[in-house]
Image (tube, rainbow, N blue to C red; front, side, top):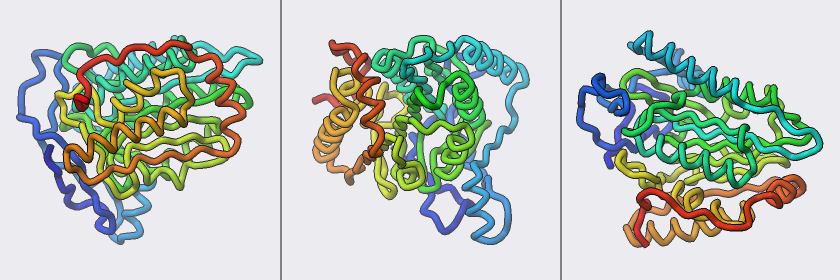
Length: 330
């Protein structure tokens, strides 16, 4: 795994992306193959001063360049169909709406988001209320792709179907990250930063207050102070100043995704118990590999237990089996 410095971005932040070295290849012949990252990351900010550039990144910039018009139309149709298939909430019952989004075209993230959607849907009784955004992973290209725009649209659709007084958003994102936020990176065509400030403003605008947020990326701890609250449970793959591991493109899971989603959230235990158990796995793997600890974070608001206990009372009482190649063999 290599680390690429993104020149030209907000200079006051240490802005690194952990990206796997991917050889340039022609993916046009087979749409199942994800596009590789080859070109340098562009400067997405506006303004000349440090303060102007900081504000620009906080607003969540996104850029598409050189995308095929037909591919864009096909993806929009997939997204529209997925949104139309969602079912409204059930009155008088706490319903979970699950959104799993891979924001990077490295196929490990697409594989992880697909299975996370299945695990979280089963755990939180969210059949018909689950949406997965994930590009091609080498075997499947049937889903709408993840991007900042598609994630925002999906959240807006959720808000129209949910009862904010009863229902819960379960959001899982997986991507590379930076100290400015989550990275959207689709080959050499799509770029963006989903900042903590931007995600907070989206959730506030839509009234999505009851929420479980699982953010899998380097530096994802930067989201905790911006998103924590009385009705928020948030788990991140790393502290605000730490990298997380396992994001090589040919993996099925990252360390955090394997530990939390593939292993512990399949078990009939509370969310807090699952996160704590996942942290133990990760600490052991990092020690064995002599890695700087990622320090996954957990924040549980004071009102969360009131609705999460009710929601988790309906989760299956038997565990499902982990799938795919583990991030680390125990």
